[in-house]
Amino acid sequence: MWRYKKLLTQTEREENKLRSVLFFGKLNIESFSQLIFAWNAFRPERGYFKFATQVRDTKTGKWHDWHSMIEWGANAQRSFFNESSTGTKYHHVRLELPESKSGDAFRIKVEAHEGADLSLLCGLYVTVAHYPSFFGENYENVRMLPSVKVSGVPSQSQMVLDHPKKEVLCSPTSCSMVASYLTGQHIDPIFFATRAYDSGLDAYGSWPFNTVHVFEKSRGSVLFYVTRLNSFAEIHRSLQNKLPVIVSVRGTIDGAPQEYKNGHLLVIVGWDATKSAVMCHDPAFPATEKTVVSYPLLSFLAAWERSRRLAYVAELSPIAFVPH
Image (cartoon, rainbow, N blue to C red; front, side, top):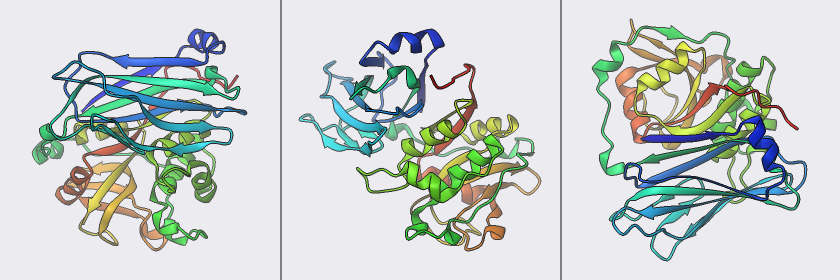
């Protein structure tokens, strides 16, 4: 997996106030078969941002068509599904190339519509992965990591929420736990879910809408985005920096309340080297007091790898982002 990000300085943001379109891209990078995009911004009070992407074919050197990805703003929050004439597809949260093709460059386009202010945009994040090269992690490398725990992260069961779709609110519930920890304030998971809802996908678990709302709740003090990680060691480094990590798991985990057939988001708060266990807050348990759980390493890693090591990660912002 390879990650690329663009953080906008205060000067750049001021300059963008006069613009209606921005571009971000990378050329001649490692070949990839999938692209994931995320952004950090303060929500426009009027209008919306439209995000699009295109990738370049590794073999032919030609650019595929642009794909509309997302609209986000005052009264717009939806992702798209579309397919190009050359077979590339954007599936609401990710761009995928046909099995026989790969990309070696990407472009991101951000357009401001209906008076939206581009100075509110703070960061752009792109993760690319080459699925044929994906391989499982060496468990022994993880076992050598020292124990670590992030204290003070609240726990919350999604199953006790007064919401008709509580069974599918794992992402906003996990994000509300992390946002509460980062801000020192209680973030209501139901309210968070309403702000993360993706009308294009008709779902509350759309990755980038969840992560950008954590950024909003932190008022720009913490970068937060969806990505794919290369190893558990990256999670461990975040934990050492006192930053919990949200991950997607799939299938069975020893000790979990159910099989996660369609993927499931939970919060990692620690690593117990003595017991070789991953310390989690899993919102799928039927009661909040049961959500604090430790999962055996081998079982956890297998479930995480079935989701191709997807994670929502936090970083302390090196730039003091403030709303204009």
